[in-house]
Length: 100
Image (cartoon, rainbow, N blue to C red; front, side):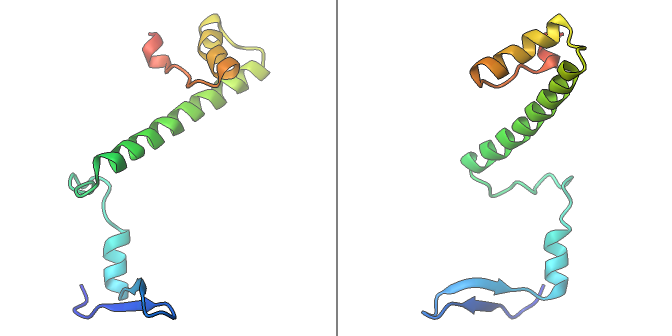
Protein backbone atom coordinates (compact mmCIF):
# COMPACT_ATOMS: atom_id res chain seq x y z
CA UNK A 1 0.00 0.00 0.00
CA UNK A 2 1.00 3.56 -0.50
CA UNK A 3 3.03 5.15 2.29
CA UNK A 4 1.51 8.61 1.81
CA UNK A 5 -2.12 9.28 2.61
CA UNK A 6 -3.91 12.08 0.80
CA UNK A 7 -7.21 13.50 1.98
CA UNK A 8 -9.92 15.41 0.20
CA UNK A 9 -11.17 18.32 2.31
CA UNK A 10 -14.20 20.56 2.09
CA UNK A 11 -14.09 24.36 2.24
CA UNK A 12 -13.93 24.24 6.03
CA UNK A 13 -10.85 22.03 5.90
CA UNK A 14 -12.69 18.95 7.18
CA UNK A 15 -11.62 15.61 5.74
CA UNK A 16 -14.37 14.24 3.53
CA UNK A 17 -12.50 11.68 1.44
CA UNK A 18 -9.29 9.79 0.85
CA UNK A 19 -7.27 9.45 -2.34
CA UNK A 20 -5.94 5.97 -2.99
CA UNK A 21 -3.23 4.94 -5.38
CA UNK A 22 -4.44 2.47 -8.00
CA UNK A 23 -2.66 -0.52 -6.46
CA UNK A 24 -4.32 0.05 -3.08
CA UNK A 25 -7.70 0.58 -4.73
CA UNK A 26 -7.39 -2.74 -6.59
CA UNK A 27 -6.37 -4.57 -3.42
CA UNK A 28 -9.40 -3.20 -1.58
CA UNK A 29 -11.94 -3.76 -4.34
CA UNK A 30 -10.72 -7.24 -5.28
CA UNK A 31 -10.96 -8.64 -1.76
CA UNK A 32 -12.06 -12.24 -1.88
CA UNK A 33 -15.54 -12.94 -0.54
CA UNK A 34 -14.22 -16.37 0.44
CA UNK A 35 -11.86 -14.70 2.91
CA UNK A 36 -13.00 -15.85 6.35
CA UNK A 37 -11.79 -12.60 7.89
CA UNK A 38 -13.63 -10.30 5.47
CA UNK A 39 -16.33 -9.56 8.07
CA UNK A 40 -13.86 -8.93 10.87
CA UNK A 41 -14.44 -5.55 12.42
CA UNK A 42 -18.16 -5.31 11.64
CA UNK A 43 -20.43 -4.60 14.57
CA UNK A 44 -23.23 -6.96 15.55
CA UNK A 45 -25.78 -4.52 14.08
CA UNK A 46 -23.86 -4.38 10.79
CA UNK A 47 -23.66 -8.17 10.61
CA UNK A 48 -27.36 -8.46 11.36
CA UNK A 49 -28.22 -5.92 8.66
CA UNK A 50 -26.09 -7.85 6.18
CA UNK A 51 -27.84 -11.11 7.08
CA UNK A 52 -31.27 -9.52 6.79
CA UNK A 53 -30.38 -8.15 3.37
CA UNK A 54 -29.41 -11.61 2.17
CA UNK A 55 -32.65 -13.04 3.57
CA UNK A 56 -34.70 -10.27 1.97
CA UNK A 57 -33.17 -11.04 -1.42
CA UNK A 58 -34.00 -14.72 -1.02
CA UNK A 59 -37.56 -13.88 0.06
CA UNK A 60 -37.98 -11.57 -2.93
CA UNK A 61 -36.72 -14.23 -5.33
CA UNK A 62 -39.19 -16.75 -3.92
CA UNK A 63 -42.02 -14.21 -4.07
CA UNK A 64 -41.21 -13.40 -7.71
CA UNK A 65 -41.22 -17.11 -8.54
CA UNK A 66 -44.57 -17.70 -6.82
CA UNK A 67 -46.15 -14.65 -8.45
CA UNK A 68 -45.01 -15.87 -11.87
CA UNK A 69 -46.53 -19.30 -11.14
CA UNK A 70 -49.74 -17.57 -10.02
CA UNK A 71 -49.93 -15.62 -13.30
CA UNK A 72 -49.57 -18.94 -15.16
CA UNK A 73 -52.30 -20.51 -12.97
CA UNK A 74 -49.80 -23.11 -11.79
CA UNK A 75 -49.81 -22.56 -8.02
CA UNK A 76 -50.03 -25.71 -5.94
CA UNK A 77 -51.90 -25.65 -2.62
CA UNK A 78 -48.54 -25.50 -0.84
CA UNK A 79 -47.47 -22.54 -3.01
CA UNK A 80 -50.73 -20.77 -2.19
CA UNK A 81 -50.20 -21.36 1.52
CA UNK A 82 -46.74 -19.80 1.28
CA UNK A 83 -47.88 -16.88 -0.88
CA UNK A 84 -51.12 -15.96 0.91
CA UNK A 85 -49.56 -14.38 4.06
CA UNK A 86 -47.21 -12.27 1.94
CA UNK A 87 -49.96 -10.77 -0.14
CA UNK A 88 -52.63 -10.58 2.54
CA UNK A 89 -50.70 -9.18 5.50
CA UNK A 90 -47.39 -7.89 4.13
CA UNK A 91 -45.45 -10.33 6.31
CA UNK A 92 -42.40 -12.18 5.10
CA UNK A 93 -43.01 -15.32 3.15
CA UNK A 94 -42.13 -18.68 4.62
CA UNK A 95 -39.21 -20.38 2.93
CA UNK A 96 -40.14 -23.45 0.94
CA UNK A 97 -37.32 -25.41 2.57
CA UNK A 98 -39.21 -25.00 5.86
CA UNK A 99 -42.29 -26.57 4.24
CA UNK A 100 -40.52 -29.82 3.32
